[in-house]
Image (tube, rainbow, N blue to C red; front, top):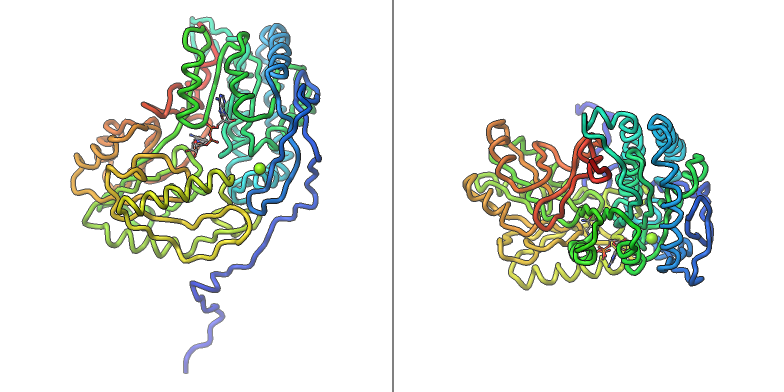
Length: 489
Ligand code: NAI
Ligand code: MG
């Protein structure tokens, strides 16, 4: 007689223990209209213009956001300049205390930040809750610790703050990028004018409320909202001393041109097209998880995403089969649902761009493969996608797609894969999967990439510097290196 068991029988396709469990959003209080945060207060924009921000998973309007013009930016820079005279002179220990307070308040409000991040930007709640918000708070904690230790970080060099920093950030990690920018600037005694991306202003504005509540002196952090023109007004303002930009390579180049000939300092964190390299001796099941996390984390809206897969020929068939099986288990859908693996594409424009590349890849002759999952009919969604048999010259291999789209190439020798991995305009990150330490050391020195992960992918830590080579930009954020762009010696 067959033994009775309590084990439920899993039908992989339909059951998968999947119960929709959307996050409760009733406790989230969003204002109808958000103003500019200048000199410690929320103020109306000079033009009286506002633009809408939407939930990309439902197309619902969430709020109206003020559009700052050059006059508003000027007001913010003046407030930051005035605040700089005091902020740069208070004791370093005192500065640290304020930054610790911001970090603690962020932890206290973590849940609200996570839900708003997911509503406004489309990323899965599991990621906002477990990665974005805790990492953002950690970034403030980490740099708070440096505030009174700068002389030890740079002995005998008498580090001094630069002045007013203009900071422009993208939509893929809205709160985390604000933390990456603001925390080191404050720790080193600078003041800030920050602009979030136009599709994801809400957590930056929540951060503005938090900063006001923290008692940070007025004008030390100013947050102005708007699109490219607002960003350009920051870049071109004559009284800004430093620009920190994260975003597309195209805009990075525009900014570099705009400030040429001025004495503004500049750091650029731009695009990427990382190679994720799987050798035949790699722990394959672990590598499959690394491939999935590398490209499908945050819908592939990640500058360091492992968007080019290189598999050693001898294991290519098995890796691709396992990868396809794993992709079938990924749930694409409501970002507020804790079970969702892949949320909404951040904007209609970005979805159009991704779909354009799906067409280009097919026309170029790569073989398109998508998981068979259903996707919601409303909102912006894209199935996890592979381009098999991709070639080095294909545009889908050379250009940043910034979506859940992975190109797959095979290789035979180490020399071949190094050559192909580097043969690209970008150089932000890479991944290596192998059992051999010697191979890891060999590759990490030969790959032209700012970050190389070994047997893991997309791991971030405030102590670790991050930044690129070539068209991925220059300058480092994070770690002790991340202090340098905000200091003069
Ligand atoms: P974008 O580079 O236009 O936007 C990034 C930020 O720059 C936003 O805050 C935007 O308002 C601001 N900005 C735009 N034009 C500006 C200007 N002339 N001067 C100053 N600031 C300006 O990126 P977009 O158009 O949203 O995305 C397009 C593509 O860029 C994506 O598909 C992706 O490939 C890439 N991208 C890469 C990012 C990364 O982290 N490396 C982040 C965002 C986009
Ligand atoms: Mg939005």
